[in-house]
Image (cartoon, rainbow, N blue to C red):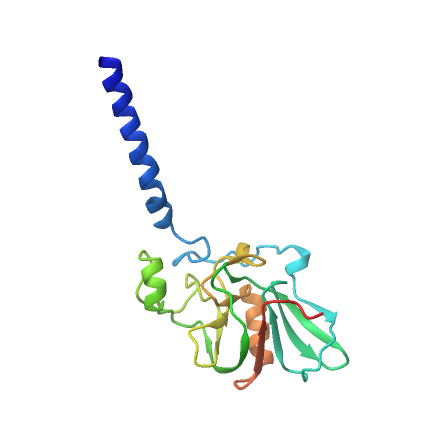
Length: 197
């Protein structure tokens, strides 16, 4: 009888651990959002994600930004069938989107106010964070249309080439500063989920 009680107690404890695991996992910080972490700007990206000039066929005019979430690249169209290609981090599954917007605002070292939907999913996030090296928006932000989404820097350069954001597009700080200087407010931004054939 004692063995039966012991086994029953162990079984109940095991069930409790199993049931509490998803809740504990859900409360873990998103590896893409770490407020207060200062970016390692010496982090070396894999060659695939490094900024480079590439051949690029498009009917879009030079100066247009084309984002391919499937490829995890942002292209700044240049004259002569070329583009500057940047490696980016994109929205995780269920948070990717597509459309046509314009850059409506630009900010250096932007403040961060996570939207209520993000706070609900990630309650550990601050309600406001002043701009600076520990801010998850990084060194620059370009605001996309009337959406809550941005093209921005990051304090997590190791997330470039991954799908971890809540819908924004992130670049390493050096790359986002470079892009920021090249594009004005009003720049057309085309977001595609699937590559063109």
